[in-house]
Length: 196
Image (cartoon, rainbow, N blue to C red):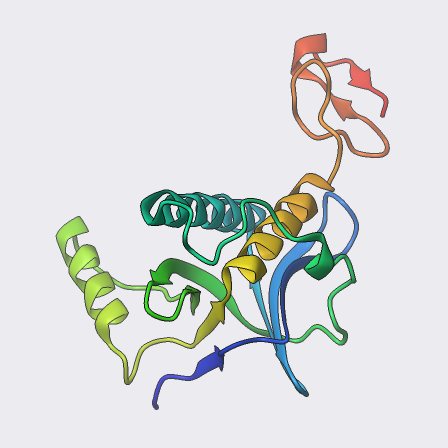
């Protein structure tokens, strides 16, 4: 079976969002172009890492171009997007590997999210070799979401993604673990239940 690539060049909308209540949220990347909608599930830490690395890459592009790249220093307010995910949210796949690149000729950020794949390997070397073969297999690899964004779209995505990650449960002021609405057992309080 050939690889399925969900290509959005450019998307009408590309956002990170969640479904569910804080503490039980499922995170998604969602790309939209016309009537096409692709949603892929991923972990909260993956969303945070993607947003942080995207900002770092954009900062590096600005630095190397001497400020001449078509990349704003901050997310433009006119393209900020705080709307919820388009529904129904139907998961195409769960993300395993992500990649970022900057296309200098086209002045575009390229975001790739590849499906999670389980590999059987006898040793660490075999696992590394199998992973490399999988990543290089353009024809038969796992499904992939590929999105090409302008610098402004990338900044807006990164800002929203970090806002979504930080919109979860507030941290306990003593131990920094997340507080549930009903409280939590705080290790710094020697096991006493701490209210929200």
